[in-house]
Length: 177
Image (cartoon, rainbow, N blue to C red; front, side, top):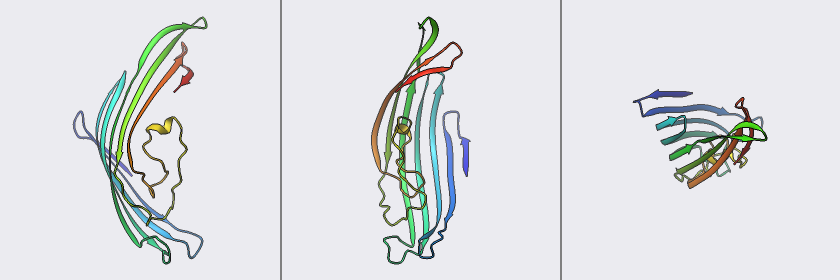
């Protein structure tokens, strides 16, 4: 469930929440009820030539796990993690002729600062979590895992430059990052 509201012209609120029950066909395997809520305060500034986004999030997750006897998993876990993110990008365009045709070449620098606080999570089972692939799009994703069972600690700066070549119909013909 996601809720979005503009608080002012320059400030927005987003609240993501999820209630999930994980069952297993094996009688002795752990099962879990997970409730997650993540309110985020956003300061978005978007224009045609770029954007600047500042956001602060508090992620709270509650687990009630069963069939955990003899494991390192806890019966109940409350996990609260803070996240701060500053993201920006600019888009520069230049008209040019390439291979005898009129084209548009862009130069798009991006940056991100991401901070996610540390919380011990070894007492939580891995119900819907796996490691994500690292790729250019994932540089600004801010997470290393699918699902919510593991949220990785971060204190990092990410920089990237992308260039695109568009034809006269604005169809992307080449992209390099």
